[in-house]
Image (tube, rainbow, N blue to C red):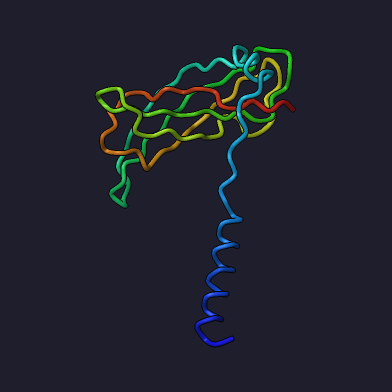
Length: 136
């Protein structure tokens, strides 16, 4: 095999290896999780923005999540959906709201920082929609 043939084989192998590392899709909200969402109310949700030294704007969403149901929850993810002034979605990001066990009756503070929101965002509170509930 000549030099060009070796190059083609190497390129083919690299493309195969690269394709096998496709991003894993996050699991959807299960029917069981969907039914439990009503037991995970958010409260005291606020938003603030500040400019960083790197000339980026850091937007933070803070609040509390309470587990009013009868089951322990190990993880809760939310979709944060940011819109422009016409109501068009400009960013949808999935983030962890609860990352360690939240027992029944427990309330926990959360903080969701964002530094990559498009400039077309309307600067209003994003929609927060529970994307996943994993029970402990």
